[in-house]
Image: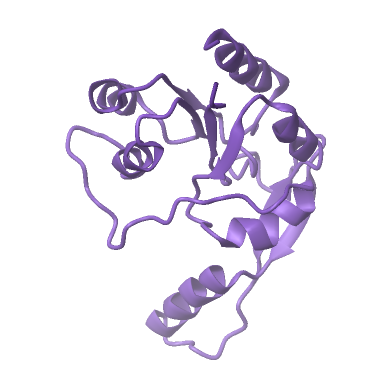
Length: 183
């Protein structure tokens, strides 16, 4: 049997960006990352504000080093489903002790699906091509679940993660139960 995919978003599930400012959640470590995408976006903003030569501040990212081993122990094939795209392999994976993972390259410009469906949802279904998958993200809604149920031919678990807390023990248990229940 082919293992299901676990499509992993970074901001929200792995980086609890919505936690109280200046209060890093327990188990997380602070990283200041200056990725090429982040720097380019900040340079555009600085230019719009009339300060193109200002210093670009690195992105503050909270990561829990226990998430790497926990993700690797799940009965899934891991895939990045994040706007970090390939930069997740260069900046996030090494911190978590993850190997280089496949990633979904998002369409540009981003699509605008109707009915409140998150822009990532159609691309995720197309990328999975009918293969069983679980997706962890902080932007998943009922509209996304309904869209996937209508457009995806295989089993799918769309698991919303609270961006104030990131992935928790309960989330890992839910993912494990779902994957082992497929067999």
